[in-house]
Structure formats: structure tokens, C-alpha cells
Image 1 (cartoon, rainbow, N blue to C red):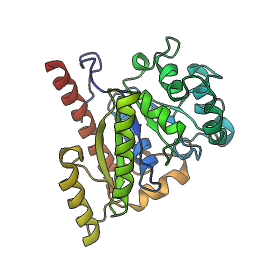
Image 2: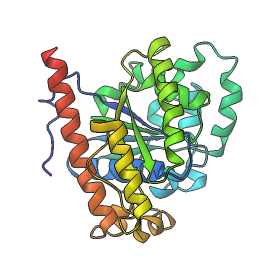
Image 3: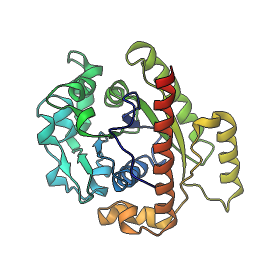
Image 4: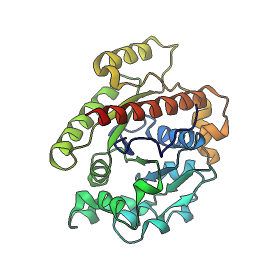
Length: 279
């Protein structure tokens, strides 16, 4: 891969992405941290916002539990400015807004707030944040639910990246998410769309896994990324060491897959920008 030039890219390129799936255990956070790492490695300026109260993305990027406040909870509720909520990671070009356990209470606290669905969108667009100017790409790791926190992410982003585990039951989750995206698009965020579906935990030795991959491609067509993420023990080990698998073991099959995914991600962004420019 070669670094992309943010100066030459058309302004219409999708820039802020939610990584979402209402079903847990599909490789959502793993995809968020490793895609962010791979994009930073090729010269992109990347912010990863951890909106999952479990804070697994924060853990995987080496942010200790006593170092996560202020973070996404304070930023979402307007308690602290962007500059106080973002941390530099050990990876050049990648910053993170960590999540603390306080974020679990945000669902209740948001209910009585004005513009409760727009809190994150308003914060990211505010002059003091200037997120679109400060970073080339913003990735938001959403919780595995469709509550107010996830809704805030869907209102704030340009597009959604959907990790999908290669098992039959996973298709139910993406169907529900797709319906939610359509409702949000009609009511709150007209630019929202599915940027792509990433097949994760693929075991090509299993006939069942291969059949699910074939079915997903038949159903979603070009929305499905050509790159698939394999089941890989190094991917599972990396978070316990507080680092993405690309740092933990750059040569393993999982790391190589995420490097290819980042390359395909960049190509899709450029194509989307070119199509927008023509229109």
C-alpha cells in the first residue's frame, strides 16, 4: 500500500465511519483497532472513538482503566472538550478517545437532553473540535446494541462499516441494523449508508463457513469487501498484551488480512469520492 494524500482527495469522500453490529462477538472491536492501525501505518491521520462501555478498543490500544477519563462519556455529554478527551497511542498517526464504565449510564442520561440523538454529531462539528480537519478518518467503535449511544454514532457518521461473523445467525443482526440505518437516514442523517460488510472469523477449512461467505456475497453483492478476516489465534491473543495484532505479530495471517482490508477501504473511499464528484 502507498500512503494516500488527504490534500488531493475530493472533499466528498466519506470521512467519519461507525463500525457497528447489534450482535456481539462478531469481531467489531478487533476490526476497529486493526483497521485504524493499518490506516495510520500508511499515512492517514486517524481517530478511533471508543463508544462501547466495555472499553475493549481502549484496552487493545494500551489505555489503562485509570486513564480513560475524560473520554467518550464526557465528550458525548458535553462535559469536556475534544482536546481533553483524546489520547495519543503508541502508533504514530493514531489517536483514541477511550471509553470508561461511566458510558454505560449515558443511555439514561441522554433521554432528557435536548437534541439527544445529535449530541455526538454536534460535538464533532463544533469549531473547537474540528474533527474533519484534524483527522483524515474517524472510526467509531459502537456498542453491540441499538440504543441512544449507537444512535448518536449513526447520526454523526457518513457511513457504516459492518463486521459480520461467518455464521448463519449473524445474518439476523445485520438485517436489524440495516432497518435501523434506513430509519436514521430518513429522519436524522440523509447521508448515512452502509459503506461495506466485512466477513470476520472465516475458517476456510469448514464447509459451513464457506457456505455463509457465499450466501452473504450472493445477498449483499458489492457491499461485501473482497478481503475476509480469518480465524487466527494471534488476533485473539493481541488484546491481552494491550496492542493491535498488527503490532503484536505483523506477519501472522490476521495482520496480513487487516493490511489488505485497509488497502481495499482506501480504494473504496477514493471511488466514492470520484462518483460524488461526477454527480
